[in-house]
Length: 391
Image (cartoon, rainbow, N blue to C red; front, side):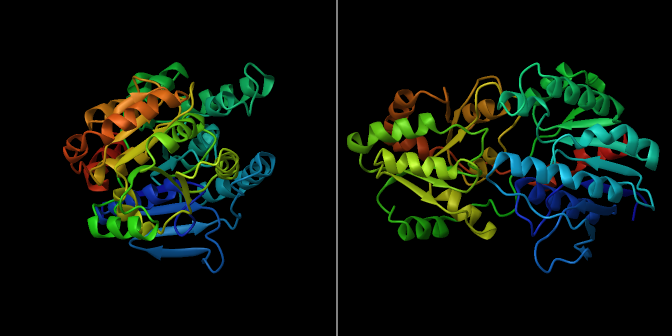
């Protein structure tokens, strides 16, 4: 043991579903293996989850606050607000850690950084998966220039400046954080990684295609949260164009989220028989699911570049599939798309997307040239350690 304790605070942690929880679990276990005493303060783990547990060297404390509904913005917002007190009390409990890491679920947790630093005496690190309240402003949840937006921005800036270090998951996000007033020497860029289940599984991929009637199809897949930050208008427009032009092209949308019902209604209304909606798949099938596609789509709404960095790209790269990034250029995801042989396209341009898909379908050598480019938690844990130690 190195004698140091790090305490993470995040709303979700396995078995509660959520991408940030999976990443946190992998990092926490890797740090425990390297001699850290690792604690996680999180929400409710669902029915039967104990309040306190130890697994793989990680001490988990669940505050008992329940999950949030993926739909219903007001309900979700109220549910999130109600869980802050329990999470903050548990974060500040004795014995105090050497390092306290605040994540971005629930949003604005970093606003408590100065209070937690005084209360615990710990080194405080913010691990930014998103940048708030800017995300809420861009999505229209908060009015641009409104009193609420200005107040939350001041609270966020104060909290960010109170942190000893801020971890950004992309250079584009680091730029946004600097715009928010974070000093450049406070910021360390440590991109996310492919989770352990995202490994090539060609046999599983063939089974997925057979099971869903895709054996002979050219599969264009979106896999992940169908959230508000991910636009689908251009994707559905491309599907409408290719329904008759290229009936062997199938669009497969795997996942759940706030937009799933709206997307399903649009698919039905347009009679997009070439679009298949698939429920979220078990974690252990991630490699098989991602590998079932010939081409992946990653989308991000305009204005969110650098505020959100779509981490699904790392799983797609790990299984050796190309992807189109439907979003702005100059971002981490755009760079990775080009580096892995894919393309960057406007998110709303269905005609451009349809033409690009046809071009790739006609040139199978391009797909074959893309190989696995997996980077896993072992590749980033040393960078995290340096931040935690203040090195």
